[in-house]
Image 1 (tube, rainbow, N blue to C red):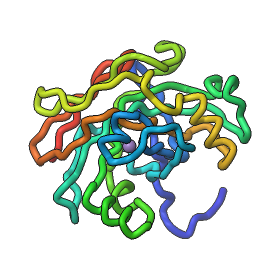
Image 2: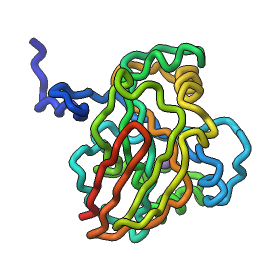
Image 3: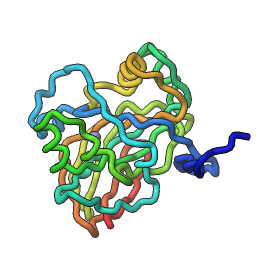
Length: 228
Ligand code: MN
């Protein structure tokens, strides 16, 4: 047995709906500007330019249903997204083969310190300080594809305190799930445990402590996250 110099960090694992087993996480990729209406609201051209990705850390994923308002920001935004969990991977995966690697899907939030992200964008610097902070990606229970079927269309929405803030349809994604998997696999080796956040529809905006966010999407039910 390996003798480790420090305590081994915990494995990040996410609950699976109606199951006692959990899904261990390896990496987290997030796509930017993947719904045209959101690209436009952020001041960008929605044309199909090549996709771009950033990463969060596995232990930024948080299934607890609570989102602690993070420090050093006064403009923390919600971005409701469908997360795709992979059961296998590889490199140079063809689009036609990509969905065979999907384990399941979950509702998630790409919570963003928009003020810090904006400052980084202006300076041409990386986004981690705005995106990859503690508990920045609340995530609901995983629904295996064996139960949901492939999810490429259907409504996705976010309510804050009962009021609809974000509404879209998964069929509005500029880059579809199989295309994202294929593209990422050309640049990285994908593997079991990888998670892809597939982008947010329009209507992103700030939250405050005490707000209740209700995520929902076709096939994934709903998931509630309280800002604390
Ligand atoms: Mn996002």
